[in-house]
Image 1 (cartoon, rainbow, N blue to C red):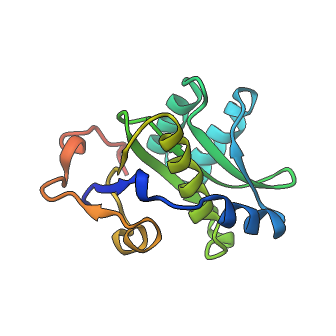
Image 2: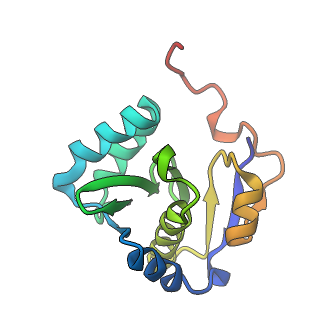
Length: 159
């Protein structure tokens, strides 16, 4: 899968989509350090040990570089940045039964907005699976020759 590039200076309004989610009872916010064990365990359970490892890195940053989507006390999704590499967005994931409701978009926009606020002009979406999705939502473009990129030779858990 290729990496993709996003022009953060052309990101546009992120607050409208986040307010729409909030009106539906979904809050997207930066995770808090005391939530680390809950979020990391949830990511491991719903996605993978590798993504849980990256999520742990996000909780070691100041400020925390992990955003979560919640409905009350229920965790619906997560998005991280600056974990595998500086200026990289990901990993990100939404619980399967609540996909298609704009939660992933909200997490993406919150993370990219935070990156923009930290002074990044561009963001790299590492190992982008849904290329067309990222192209449509944030105007991301494929970085030619980026597959497997930094992930070449990465150790993987046995299946």
